[in-house]
Image 1 (tube, protein in one colour):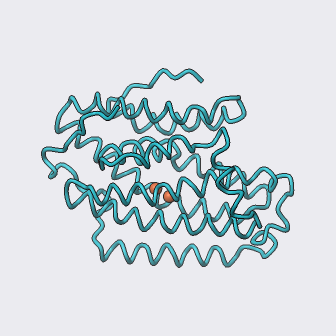
Image 2 (cartoon, rainbow, N blue to C red):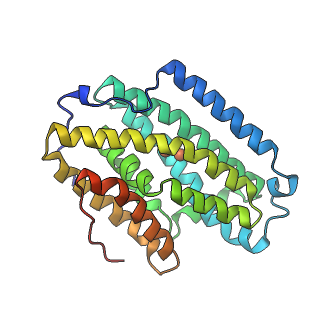
Length: 264
Ligand SMILES: [Fe+2]
Ligand SMILES: [Fe+2]
């Protein structure tokens, strides 16, 4: 059910809002890594090896760890595909910068699993169990079109799981003694904000370029939210889902997208 890919006829409409060059990006990556390592160095040993973390939290945390780790692993892969197939240079460099970001997030989340002493054979089953965002990310991994990947992955998914969601996750982990996860969430959010920003500029450029692109983007939005909605089923994650939609619509509605009517 692939739709005809949409194209930005005038690539000049897209400009990286962070105005990064390779030189600036590498300096930024280095600064971020140093800042992260400095914050990580302040984490008490008991939190770092999960001995002072609430044991009931830890029992249930495997699902959350999987929901952190595998989306980052998926992002590293789908953004590599997006970079490889990028229709023009400015977009390709944004994807390549993001690839380096996602790879760093993946490393951080791998360390959490390891420090928590969760055997690697248990990671994938936790990710494949009901109630995770697995279905959405598996769908993204099947895509090849750069614009579709960026609309679904960056604009919809990252736009929805935006800064507010990560702040909630960070505060929740910290309250239960899991300072390590909290530091990771606060580090990743600085990059995710940049990923959302360039996707917004891309969506705006596509709509300005050809108003009929809005219909395709609307369909991609609805498809993506449909794949996410199962996470909210069962009521337990209802509050998460409400926040998720609220963050997304805050960026999507001003661009002319309509809320999708999803049965939850
Ligand atoms: Fe990430
Ligand atoms: Fe990202």
